[in-house]
Length: 131
Image (cartoon, rainbow, N blue to C red; front, side, top):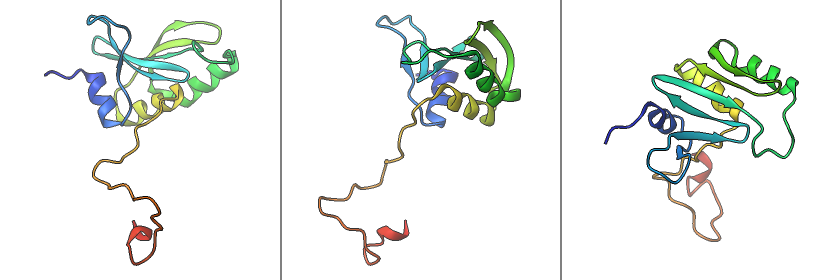
């Protein structure tokens, strides 16, 4: 099956990639606390918004977010008082910055690591202190 660029980025950076709705023709997004990432053709886009947040964003939040993104922004497509949508570069550092700005929760790395049993106390002899 063909993976989209967004799915490859999500897998590489250990973040979730979800459909936006119930139908099959909806696009996939990487959701975060303060917006989401999505793919628009060959471009990777970031949407910084306060939808679903308890406190609304201020222009200062927007300024700080753009400062954190820095040179990762190629162009800003929508520009409001406290929200924006922008195209970002697809290199590793730029995607990392965008993931942090949007507030995406990462998956924990637990593949192949056995979980300790109940009452497990890490000791030097078990080797758990040296991992």
